[in-house]
Image (tube, protein in one colour):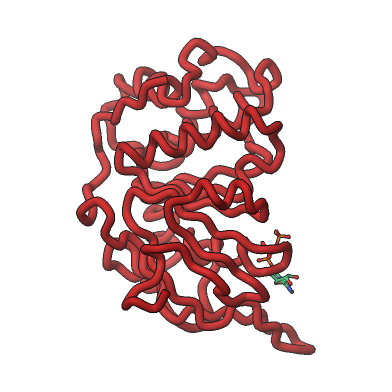
Length: 252
Ligand SMILES: Nc1ncnc2c1ncn2[C@@H]1O[C@H](COP(=O)(O)OP(=O)(O)OP(=O)(O)O)[C@@H](O)[C@H]1O
């Protein structure tokens, strides 16, 4: 498996290892008619560029809520998130959807491939939906190179049902790479896989970071958390531990 940087149509960001994402005093409270439910409390951290960044913590600690803030799917009650120096919150919904398509690739625990489309067509669909800027005549080749990146070029014509769980997750990673985003965000990406397939997924992640991609993943598994180069641990919506490089201003 060999990562081929695509004909990079994404902009380049900060120098390797500097903060790509800054989260500043982020809090989130769910407000219902009956009560206010605080979920995240005054969270601050940075995600270094080209890091394999973990958000670890037990069930209910706020990991998915935090991911939704990072992708701009949900907005914080207070605090802010800067992506390459630009505040996500400041964007309108349409702008945000376009921004997400170009800047963030999302990998889900249950793959969420379109079952009636081949591996290559799943990647092509992501290119279409993400407003791929490459010339259309190159799209099929680009989709194939995304599949080659995850070692599945030979499986391009297969339907998801003709692939193993690990292979389906690799197609999902190829799909997340379709528009060459600087960041991949993965929610329990190996939660539905055996340990060998999980290892293969993490090898791909490591290889991608060595080519400049930043990978943020959520897990409640301490063994998988230890694979990270940087990250935070949450408990009850607060940071209780941080790996080197993840706190700004020497707070760790
Ligand atoms: N819409 C909501 N209404 C009420 N409470 C919510 C809502 N969404 C999340 N919560 C609560 O917020 C807390 C954090 O939830 P979240 O899903 O972010 O945790 P998590 O760490 O991702 O958990 P898991 O590992 O089980 O997915 C939990 O106590 C959850 O019950």
